[in-house]
Image (cartoon, rainbow, N blue to C red; front, top):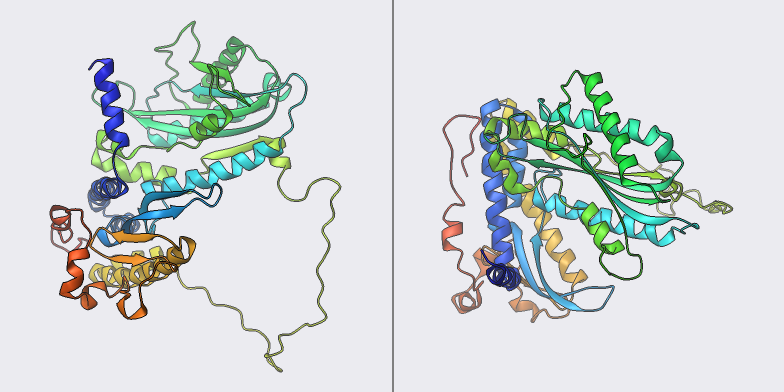
Length: 439
């Protein structure tokens, strides 16, 4: 492929509409849900099966939307967008969760950088630390990287030069047939506030820390594909005010908040290992702060927190009774595990469908108020409007009962994108048994 063809491909990708991107999101999500469900059924793990059901529910056509005239409250601009109404599973195997996590992390890091004041001789620098391919499973690879990072941050070269840092980890998955050691490759990215450090000094220090971490876990340290008998380390200055030949600060933050594992990478590993990867990444903090970025949390130095007092100690409507404590419901995933373990997966799927329908109804109204001038469509043909563009009340069709109230006259205004082929797979079923799904 020549340079002209590459440019044409990039332009073609940029011309995708929000509705096209919504369809691609659903297709990728369903493919990943199918792989995860096969892995869960193979292991006969009730919790993994419940997660697979939640993941599948996230990427149903009725849960994927695209919209016009969404508003950016920072710039006031209108744009077309897409997304999921409800992200049913807080796991890094879900693209919707990864995207939301990246947006939250990006917001926190930008706010922290805005408050950071650079001292004389300090700059923002972007640091990349790579790991060798180890003969170990995914949990051991991550454990070795964590230990090496801990040793690295305790060394004098780091403590005397780096004042603050955000450190993020990323893991790529290669083809198992082409890599002799392993198909898991963990590496770390860091946005640091530091004095000048030579690249070779960091490379020597990082190589030594990784070698010691491997020795502690009994993993063979293999120096392959390295230069100068060191692991590959890259450190670059970040342009704070303008872009010359280096990344800007915003671009560096975006690079730091990239996806941990791309969804397409799961196709490269055996199906039996997908649950293992999800379990290793579950509840794992992917971006960690260090130094003065930690000191920004809570109250600033010199500030005092005034305690708010009230003369009223009770609600005026309470009378002589005290307030009752709110009883929290059992988490949805725990309900799924209990029902699947007892052989009631069909009951679990019915309960899940009802619960997600209720949550979607709330989310629909929330989006209508957040983006009052927008028009929303779901991939199953549903449509609703922002509060400022809603038609007369008699013509408003709620998303929850769209199918039952739709009239023939409204069918012409249904979602224009052809999704017959996609919707035909909505009710696909797997092998029989109490552990299998039957939609």
